[in-house]
Image (cartoon, rainbow, N blue to C red; front, side, top):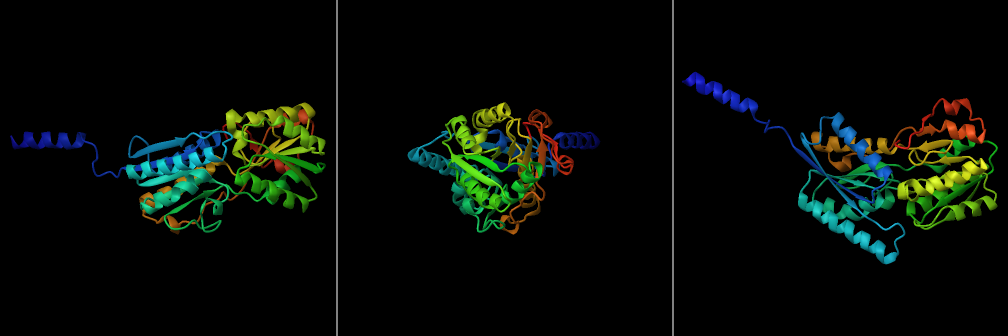
Length: 336
């Protein structure tokens, strides 16, 4: 009888879940659902899986996506900020082990509430950490850390100049987002140091890009640079596709200073959004599994710029890209 009870007890405990296994809950907050944010989110999940944190097994991911108007006026922008703060409050009530914020607005306007609640926070897709509330470009501050997608315009323009040495004027169209405006202004200054003139045009997020492109062509633009600007990802990359249709018709080269978007640029140079999310995921693992405090982790950045190329676009325009650049480039995919 005792032997039978022992066998039954063994069978019972062997068939039960491992109650001692650590379970983790991560809440995610972002404003707008766009492909670049999806790429970062998938990279984040990749890093977690690599370290044994698997959704549906020992990990629960709760994703909060706040809708935002394409071209919000001042009061509508205030409304978005209120939504971020309210959602941050709901996340605090969820009591997750960690929060991932994707993008500058989600990071900047949720940070105080989440950090004050004692919940570790990690950010992704932030171009300027200082603008998002960090103490510097390399250190975040108490209770949070993350991965930046900041790129020095000098570096990416240098690659564009190597690829297109005969080009003299670059057109850059951007919206009113702080990061996009800052990149355009810095690009003007640093391109001039390399013998390249930059002409710019600001548009609203709901504006068609065509009129702005024509205006810059009339100012002498013989190539276009697509800045790191969420405007281009809106409406399933509609602004990117419209601009690249114009450049294709005129056989004018375009270089994207990001690695996501529509097909048709000769080169895509910048940080990979999926890699950026992966870096944030690595930080999250150190916080969750190793007990590292967020402020002990410096802001992560991709060591080497990713270079992608569209061979069809290069052939259509009829230009030759230096071999040393093409050897570094991988084929472009819209899901990069």
